[in-house]
Image (cartoon, rainbow, N blue to C red; front, side, top):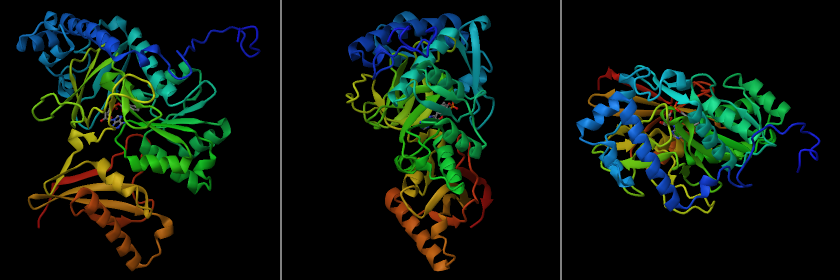
Amino acid sequence: MSHKQNKYIQVEYIDTMPHSDKYWQKEEVLPRRELEEMQLKRLRWVVRHAYDNVPFYRRAFKNVDIHPDDIKTLEDISKLPFTTKDHLRENYPFGLFATPKERIVRIHTSSGTTGRPKVVGYTARDLENWINMCARCLYMAGIRSDDVFQNMVGYTLFTGGLGFHYAAERIGAMVVPSGTGNTKRQIRFMLDFGTTAIHSTPSYALHIKEVAESMDIDPSEIGLKIGCFGAEPWSESLRRKLENSFGLKAFDSYGLSEMNGPGVAFECEEQDGLHVWIDHYIVEIVDPETCEVLGEGEKGELVLTPLTKEALPLIRYRTGDITFLMENECSCGRTHPKIHRIVGRSDDMMIVRGVNVFPSQIEQVLMNIPEVGDSYQIVLKRVGALDEMVVRIEVRDEFFTGELSDLERIKRKIEGSLKEEIGIRIDVELVEKGTLERFEGKAKRIVDLRNTYISQ
Ligand code: DLL
């Protein structure tokens, strides 16, 4: 349609140019060989950039006797040293930045659980690349210019808010920058503004469902079609619960501040693995103990090297997130490889009676049990020399008969399912609805009391 024909637009000034009705950018469908050629060129650039401009990398490369000119093939990446979260913290705030301050146009931080925050920076070009990567994700989930996108994540130093905000605007959607909190008002906005797509953590989405129900609003009547959920591990059964409750399609969204923020990997319509934008990141999976590089299908720690970051070129960054690379081809036509949804962070892995357990495995079991309500908590204790786990669970109102025998039956049922799926006996404690904390951002489901010694 020409400008004259469009009665709503006086001057066409919005840069809304999808590559096609299916893909935001043409790079999404480049043949793998071309992507790899691009990766090699960019890898050589980023390694040189880090070496020339970040004293930390000059030293780190010298320590392992490697020079940027030694990078001749993509496989040569394995000669480079890793970067860890501690390196970022030790160089707080700007020590790993590769561009002078006058070229940095924004910073964000990621606090994690301990110590100094990690500070990340962006040049204007970094932001432009980031917006487009996030726009690829939202477009892939089906968000278009006629959507109303309610962005219910933090807008300040957290990358979730601004990252997707600008991307949704770029697509031309109507953005409701509502941030986190005031859940009743969020729900009213959804109804009043005709929100069709939401972005939040999966745990906040679960809370919104619960609050809507308490307002006598059926979540499926709100009119939501698309949910973009991420920033924390979640399970397939929570996806099903959110999809069934809201009547939307729920997509897993992965990213981390150190790699811009959201927009690193995202699910397509198949909802089976997340495409990683490999024209901007090299993906490796390594054994977290030995750092040996693992092959397709082998579970390990995700290591990412950003290929286009000017401000913060982190080489072989150990994310701490556990996943694996999936099979190559995807029916959506995108040529970028997929990672399996994140199983958990290596720091969150619990060892109970010799068995490795991630919180998302517990959630996967719980969300399939109808009696289980919308909140749970994992309490870790040390009894004598052993770690013990107790899962505190809110029971749905309609199953709370007040009869002790009913509660005992529910407890035994949940313990049975946990034993069957995870292979160890896990104690369950049932609590009344509303007892456990709710979360607007990333949920904190683990309460670690292991330093509080409990004698046997
Ligand atoms: O959480 C960026 C983000 C914002 C991603 C909004 C998705 C949506 P950080 O605060 O730096 O950045 O936390 C990054 O969160 O290393 C993972 O451990 C975890 N994480 C992020 N997305 C997922 C996901 C943002 N989809 C850390 N599944 C990462 C599991 C996730 N874990």
